[in-house]
Length: 135
Image 1 (tube, rainbow, N blue to C red):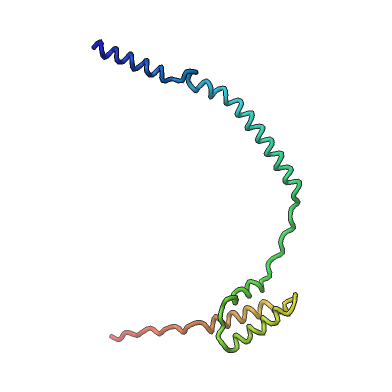
Image 2 (image 1 turned 90 degrees about the horizontal axis):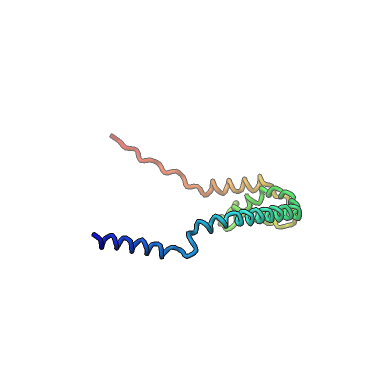
């Protein structure tokens, strides 16, 4: 039994020797906290000042005008193939007018919308009839 007590004493000595020679870290952490708080406060003040300067330098941009609704409708025809016939002819006439000048030749949203609706109806497949079941 005496040897077991001696072994326990050796283990305690080893644990003490493993400890940091300057003591536990609790003392160091307590000292570092006030310094860190001062640094954080200084950084916060600097960032607040830079934010104020940035706001003063950049004036607000004027709001963007709303997008032309004709452009949205015109984009629906880009990259699409219209079959030969009256729909393709109508699109060709509209595009010639559109590319004629800054005012886009007076092409209206209604003209583009009606062409798009006509094109969609022409592309639709007729509904299949359901087979009737006789009893």
